[in-house]
Image (cartoon, rainbow, N blue to C red; front, side, top):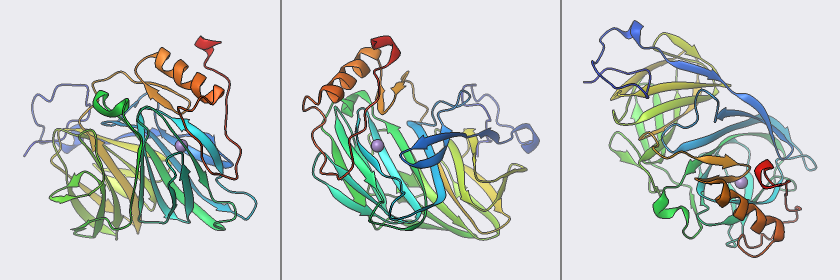
Length: 310
Ligand code: MN
């Protein structure tokens, strides 16, 4: 058994057996806009740039969408990342430049790999009316695949692990000995925890750093109560973690081997240099074919070039 270590950037010297010495690190999200929807951006924050290769976490809703007002993010480009879209409520249509059109529902995974370049839209207008609630994550791709071909996967049947007071649905990677079939280019994992009131213990990997984000409900971890809207960072070095739901709770657990690479993120691009981003954005603005075409009724999205390229 190893004890929890709060700070992933510190060496794990001695395992502590004093739980008071190691507390959950809680950071606030901040408001951002995606399409017509307000979102709460949990990662990146100044204090927490990445969790494993997870480099972006947007919690959207719950908020009503109608026949005329929805998520409705028109075609836009990505490089160097995987989008992991996960819904708690509602449905969204994904359309991309590879020709995939996929309705996503709660409990299903949409996983798009951008590689050298892909574009997609995320639409609700005319498709769904009601409350929309979900999370979109980005996972930074490693050098081995980030300049490669784009790809798309949809998984409607994901494996589950029974917990003392709930279940874990494994979206990517493994929790304990339960593994998702989804593609994975780095050593990371993600799961939805669906909890009844009471304590549960979730197996972790000691070489991963982890964080949690709640969709609804409330949990106590290391003596700290966590509610929706905040990121709870668990650190590295735990081989399990205990949490107590004080009401019915749905939450995401995600983690991975801490990222060594220095990422540069601008708009919808994840890269290692500014030149890579400038090149990608020129391609998008000039519509030179790198990002293909999306068969979407929505207008393509464009923004001014980055400051360094003006
Ligand atoms: Mn996108």
